Image (cartoon, rainbow, N blue to C red):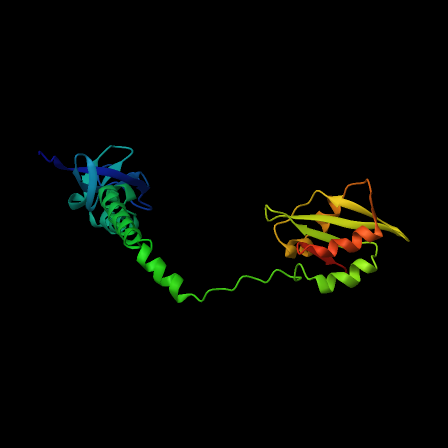
Length: 234
């Protein structure tokens, strides 16, 4: 593969030499200093700066002098201006590209070294973490002894919660109580646990149907014969 090397120049700036008379025609303040930067390029992409140089030119007589040809009156200001001039950043273009690629390789390598935990590591982590006991389904469900007194003296807002074969719960709310009848409201909210009945009171309330289902008081007491019923009272 062929590599094309060479040198090039880029302009840094033009500066007037103050208080200097042209050594050729004597015109004062007519000499301009042009400073440029030289660089080595590869495939015409600047690689390394090689230094700064300057030439002077008189605007009146057009005399051009290189640094080595300048008289002391020129050279003192020329050296100060040349020293303060900044080398264009484009002269480091190839080095900048190489630097970015190198940093990118380091970043990709660092990220690649952070491998996700394997199945064995996950298993060890799971074994090391103490198992958290599942929260108890409170209040305790299907307690006939606790239900008996509540069913014998129903109150408005009591909740009769029945567990269904699909492991969800159906809810009936006591809406009205008269001497021989209890009027119930069913709810479309069907939670997955008893804890949700207490925690999601708003959902229970929003799911209540407007129509009332009458139930004789004797039938209400008979509900205690099933182990699937839980009565909740605030």
